[in-house]
Image (cartoon, rainbow, N blue to C red; front, side, top):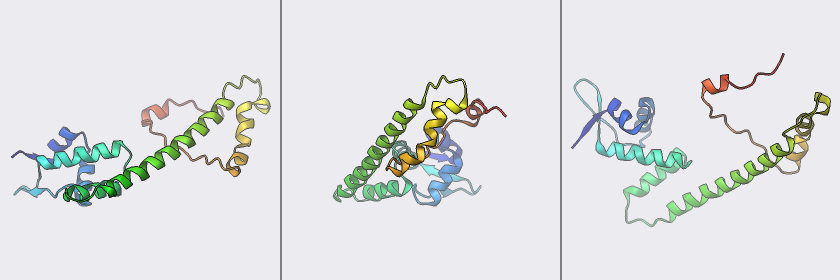
Length: 161
């Protein structure tokens, strides 16, 4: 049976050491055994657990949902109705988000390519002034988190002062 220190586990899974410690703390993975040197030692099963978590996270599941999936895995003879409900609920949220993003995309397409000489005639600025009206009419525009790296954010165009 293979035993891995946390640094080895991190390298094998591509998951940050602090994140592994967090997953251990909340019970998402098995507790590590401790050596005389106080190092954490994990089994091959921890790698499987972390890969499962990574897959779930890449599909957008929350840690609470992942914990529910893990509990289901502990009872292989249990009905998979709960798993189906978790997936259906998540899928509904994704469908709603897709619709929201398509609305935002359509709005941004109508705003783009202004080609006006002055801001008072700018289609972008004019459209943004009507965004509150769109929100009142039921188009919910939620901010989308910027997932660019800090380096990429520094390359973003700056407003003129």
